Image (cartoon, rainbow, N blue to C red):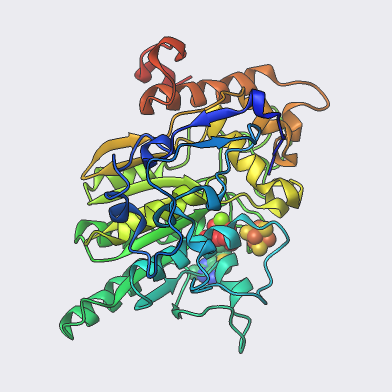
Length: 392
Ligand SMILES: Cc1ncc(C[n+]2csc(CCOP(=O)(O)OP(=O)(O)O)c2C)c(N)n1
Ligand code: SF4
Ligand SMILES: [Mg+2]
């Protein structure tokens, strides 16, 4: 995490007495916050609601838990957190997927008061957490196949419904390959039937568990084992791939959200919000993979933040097919800053700089900025109509 300390004189001061100061979506009062953040079992030493807090670490977007009212603190700061994904698993150092899953599942467990079943697709998360006969899960957890997690979760939810147990909640989770590609048909069916399942996709933009092959979520120009950095157009091709959050929205399900591990508080809040609803819900989380992306294990959060601050990864929420909120870019960075830190994009800078490719990726970021309103209109990039850009 990049964090630069600054003197109090250069500090930013934000009033975070409402969560709307953290994202543009949110309740307007602390009393409303329980809707988004779930009910905290015991409230001790609460901060007075009207106390504004100062952010002294301007290089970081972190909010110190002790500065927040208890109802808004991270689930991880709760001594009674569930530790759903606990120690002993075999994820690589700095694995974004392990981090995201831990925060997401603990938030879901809190919202469900511990009565949760998690269904897992095949992939890194499943493999590193459950080398038979061991497990790192402290939640009722079920793995079947690579492509059928949504169908299995639908079945689990239907079984509990038949038993009259609407207190037991169901979460399904998988990587981008399991979600965007092989499990896509089952997922679309789950959405169409509005089955009572929260599906969480941990998107590391390739099939990591089997050696970094391209998936339908791999970005253009990225090098993978199956999109090598050779030939006239090295890396993954432009004009392919699937934008699953938008596809999910097209099903007009109750809730769709994107998130990243750069803002774990936001991820927790979205899981909690999703768990406050019934029916099919979908959260798509960006989880950098140091091994597949060629990044330092200490840079996972930084890389995810550069993705959001460049506009390449828009963070938003949708309900019943409409975008209802988005998280504004706080300090815009060129996409180049995001690309440069990753070996999978190294061929865009060496041996010769590929400006035409970098420009196309910048155009994608600019389109996201405009589509989701990530910058004030006055500073948003001026672009041709989306139809023209699509073929750019
Ligand atoms: C039907 C089937 N095909 C292929 C595989 C091999 N396989 C296991 S995990 C995996 C890739 C998973 O990629 P993703 O879903 O993106 O998860 P990640 O490992 O990246 O977290 C593949 C191809 C399998 N288990 N089952
Ligand atoms: S390969 Fe990537 S996703 Fe898999 S455990 Fe390692 S860092 Fe995590
Ligand atoms: Mg993957």
